[in-house]
Image (cartoon, rainbow, N blue to C red):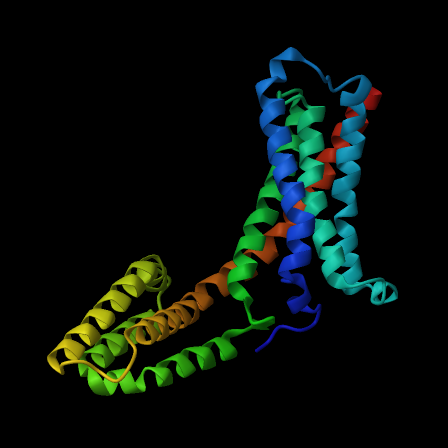
Length: 285
């Protein structure tokens, strides 16, 4: 179930993403930290000078965010450059726009309509960051390809097969893994059961890996040494447990991403509505 549609693998291109987003993210974080510390010195004010123009600039950046959605859905733009570049620009603008707006407001609250617009902007920006985090857990990148649920299951199965020789030497290792797999891959049908399984998944994964490795060491010691390299068994255990953990968490992340996708667009409508009211109010009164 590899995601296609808008070339998901391109969105996860690590080198180009790092070149664009890392300096933008670090720069925005430093600027916000400095701006917050000097906010009471009033170097910028919302109603004049550079402080005023940062408002339209930030709002313009937020409007330009919509170009990414148009690039994905509007046929005349289908050939307008690689989708990954649009996506990286989309994320960069999602960091730079709110930064400009915060400096426009000088990190202070103002009128009611200004506060609603500011809160809406922060909500949309925060929602985008959360959505990106969830997205990376729904579409895992592995050796340059993006894996969906079907391939994640295949990856876990290949890892299980690589441990067959170790399981023959240490049957207890196989029992530990079977117990872990049953808990991770069958979290239950209720939301509470799934959520509890998701919360405990990390702890269970680490515990299963340690227990399985300990079982192999004990069997190896009892046999006076084993033909398999201990380091290789440890790597195979790590890879298999990680793959099973990803499969177990996939359903939760997939539902969370669907919920996020349903909420993010309304948040954007609220943002632009509040921003329009704020602009009109500022220039009319």
